[in-house]
Image 1 (cartoon, rainbow, N blue to C red):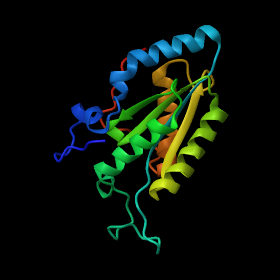
Image 2: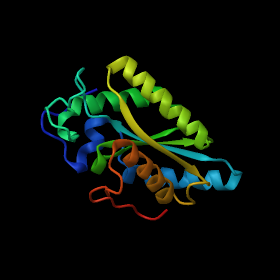
Image 3: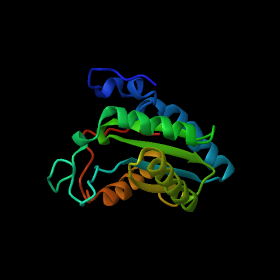
Image 4: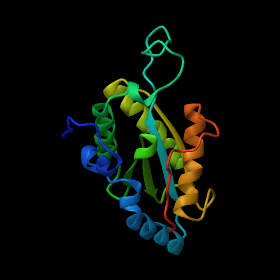
Length: 178
């Protein structure tokens, strides 16, 4: 895994972490959704990110009560990306959501309950290997939406609630229709 000494821009997020952005993977996601519709299979989505680091006393690392993405280094996100790549099945699709400093995993043939179990497995595994907690939200086709955007937005809403960001929109979130 390689990391750039220069902070990544949104355009080279995928190059830095070796994970394609959601927009770059969208054609593959549309094909997967069409397959799920055709064969009446579910398609689970897990949106996750690192939790803000907390000291043993319960105070945030910088002493403030607010959570900040700046507290977490790009190397740690790279580690999370590598962990997810090695944990997912070959048929699963891992994407980056750079505007939220998060990852979205698309799990073919996995329903909402299976996506919840996958999120628990990711949390336990990353806590065990890196010592950091994850925040996440899940959704699944067809129950939570009929398009990739609907399903991802539902997972994002659950992720925002898990992060304590209820009602906060993702900055510059732009999705094309598919």
